[in-house]
Image 1: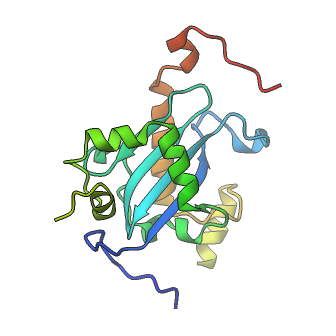
Image 2 (image 1 turned 120 degrees about the vertical axis):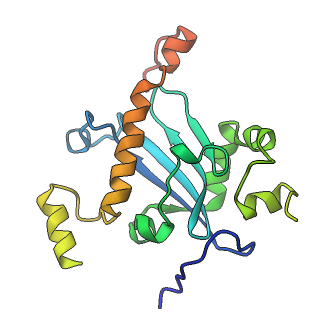
Length: 131
Length: 52
């Protein structure tokens, strides 16, 4: 058994998982660009089955940071299971690596600014906002 | 699953790419949205630095 259950992120003890994968604009071609200099990186923090934080980075573009409850329209609405990310080799990263990048891009201040709207129970708890 | 792998190979995707097609679509949309972002050099007026 993989131990994966169709949880939702209302559980305060949901498993936290972090991912980073390269992504490219349709005009970019991965295969002709093995150095990977042109493509961007998509970062995600899943609180249980649902996305809590998302980061998007492109070379020469301002990084984008997104939080569930605030930026839902631009965020992944699929469950972790539905994305297939958990089965993708090399996609999962350590939480500390995600956090380092999140902080570097002003995530701490962004979370503070929108603290009342954040929907992830994990983030609420960490911000000291859980009931 | 085998069928899905065959389909992905036929599309020319790397074999390790086993994320769902819905997710791949989402990523492509987000990547396309990046085109509308101003570049850092446009915002700061600086030339992009070369890594070399």
